[in-house]
Image 1 (cartoon, helix red, strand yellow):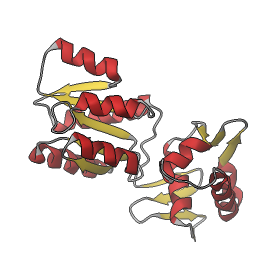
Image 2 (cartoon, one colour):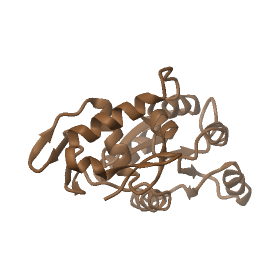
Image 3 (cartoon, one colour):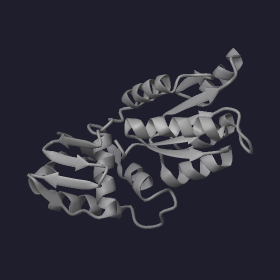
Length: 223
């Protein structure tokens, strides 16, 4: 599950570290931000699969950050707030929040909500060591094994494969893959995605058939 990145934007250092600790325990890759501006920078750089967003933060509050994110990204977002007023929750949902957690809360409850939201969003929670379609993935060591033979992949090839597996059965456009793996500021040709997929399939031999072309859209991973 290390391939699933979760951004935690929370200005309370202790609470942020607790959440990051629980995320690591659950096998997620947690990324911490102490204010709204830092959260936006990390969102653009890391392209997380889920965002935990505190409402009250310095520089930019959670509503402002979410509004910026929603201009280009439908990433699942859970908002954290110490407030209980109904208007705040309504504002969050209107801006584009997917779920709301009111402080104080149990970190275990937050983990359950994260898993439920990822599932609803179609993002599979692949275990750190798992076997999918006969492909053994060890996310902790960034190793891919097929028929007990280690497949040597470049970093980008590995990231593309894990991204497809984490979103298995979902048709992902070339633009989505490019933005997630190479980043929004990548200035190269979109065909780099096709080239990487082609190399992946060749290295995976027969198992390369698990990466299917979706005509007019892009690719998907299908067992």
